[in-house]
Image (cartoon, rainbow, N blue to C red; front, side):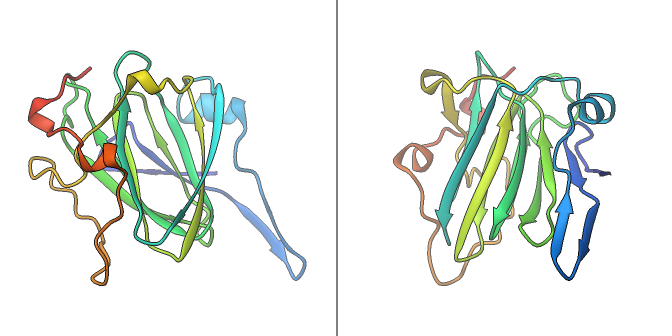
Length: 181
């Protein structure tokens, strides 16, 4: 697995080694000992899988009491995946990074606890899977407004349709009004 550093040092883009021939391909997507030694010394406790259609924007989600680190990847389709640093003591506090993750490029993104996370679906349909370091607690989930001008994420929005949001995400909080870690 190749580690690609990002402009936020705690966030890592991971690119697996893919072995393929005329029959298909094989790749290792996670090995605990390698991940702990090279990326983050964490334990994953929950795996999630979601399916979304083109134009759906999910997030930017975060938790305060039980913040989740996430290892995310796309198994079908493509998304533009975003992490926003909400760690007040971090030199990259309030900064964001975004990457295309797809079934074709097979990349994964490691997003540590203390970040808001979201993605925008750029293909017709996408299946998105992720490992979490804490259990999901709906009473501890918050949303940073996806288009907050203070953060200024450059989403690759479709010109044909407005992003499709949940009510919770449409009513996300502004960056300056949030409590942080």
